[in-house]
Length: 115
Image (tube, rainbow, N blue to C red; front, side, top):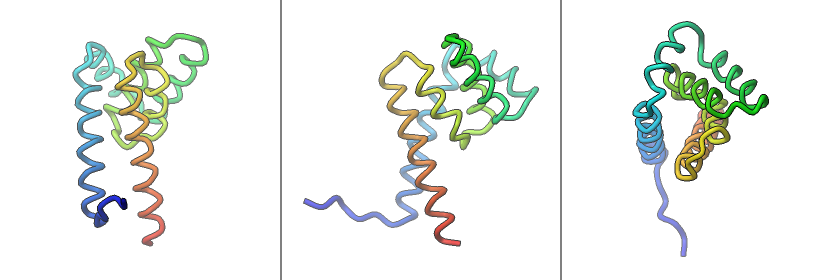
């Protein structure tokens, strides 16, 4: 059985809904206020890079804070989604973050192909 065909606009609408949900979950975390303060100081890619360094050092808590701050600053930060999926302990959130990253990559690839 074939899945129902969707138009590009329907795919984008579903993707935005999934991303909004994951962003909402990320923003309701207790680390949100700290992440909000951090994001004012630097750009999303810099925060994601700090998150990766913290993750490599084994500090998952700090890495998660940096990735959340990066995503608060820029919800389209691919590296932030992948990093948060590696740093967070919650299995459901890991899956949601990976899905958001894959959806973002798919959307960007399709936009580039349409040019």
